[in-house]
Amino acid sequence: MTKNLGGLLCAILIGFMTATPSARAADRVVHVYNWSDYIDAKALDEFTRETGIKVVYDTYDSNEILETKLLAGRTGYDVVVPSATFLQRQIQAGVYQPLDMSKLPNAKNLWPEVMKRLAVYDPGNRFAVNYMWFTTGIAFNIEKVRQRLGKTAVDSWDAVFKPENLKRVADCGVYVLDSPEDMFAIALRYMAMNPDSKKPEDIRKAAGLLAQMRANVKKYHSSEYINALANGDICMAIGWAGDAFQARNRALEAKNDVAIAYVIPKEGTLMSLDSFAIPKDAPHVAEAHAFIDFMLRPEIAARNTSVTNFANSVTESKQLLDKSVADNPAIYPDAGTMARLFTVSPYDAQTQRLVTREWTRVKTGK
Ligand code: N2P
Image 1 (spheres, rainbow, N blue to C red):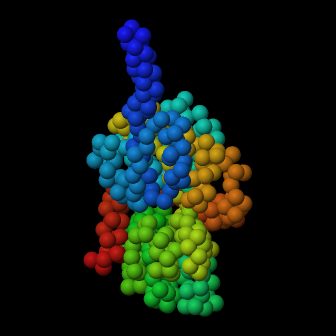
Image 2: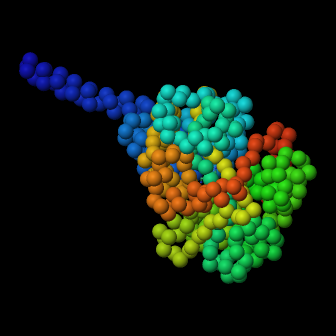
């Protein structure tokens, strides 16, 4: 009896000891809100396996969606990934908490050049660390576009802004990013105006150029173009670099004879920086730091870039990448390409209202 009781107690004790760590692990969670098609899903599993922290992962495809939630507060998110201009005004609106750099030892791996560029939006790099940086350009189906534009090379924004060009490719399907910040900056640059102009008359001129595209645009959307290009449902998209290469790779995997290319037009384009930040009311601050720090490990950053084809800013990760990614100037721009890239600053409230109104008019005609 005593012996049996001892055995039972022992069994309970062993059961308790083995159950406790997993029970504790189940308690730890981090809620991440990130752009769609922007991470290696296996990195999330690995993070959970290693730290015991479960990841609740949710996605969006527009800064406006993220901002609406952040400004309403109590999102429940622990980690979000705004673009730099939005980050700046969200910092000013007080929606973020400063990062605890002592909890981010891997931040030492960040490329100083990118963090310097980010500091323009987040002085002193207090609220954010960079995740990815990239350009906005033209992704297209090589064969279908060649059939329609002939020898006209797609190396200029002329391909989309000259009505006669866009009209010729309209029948095979054109998507445009539903991202006014990108589209206004690019239109201004194409018209040889300051891409960062906040003058109402400049914004209206850019809206005029953008509005004349509407008849030839199948959809304004910021994520569906990846599959639509890969499937051959559309032949051209104004989109983000990594997404374009994901479309190319999905088509290659499907062996469907669709070949996709991406160009940074010669007139130059917008360069954007997407960064990790922690909302002020995040429920799991320690877990948020653990998550961000994990993503800053060179081998994890390299895997995220290999899968998404977006450039990360972890210096040591570049040597771990396949040469086809690391040496692709459309992913990691070389000095010559870099010189053609520009960045913009956030819209003040009044300009934002004008841009929102004009963008609706561009898309709907009303
Ligand atoms: C990922 C798009 C991220 C770039 N699909 C836009 N911030």
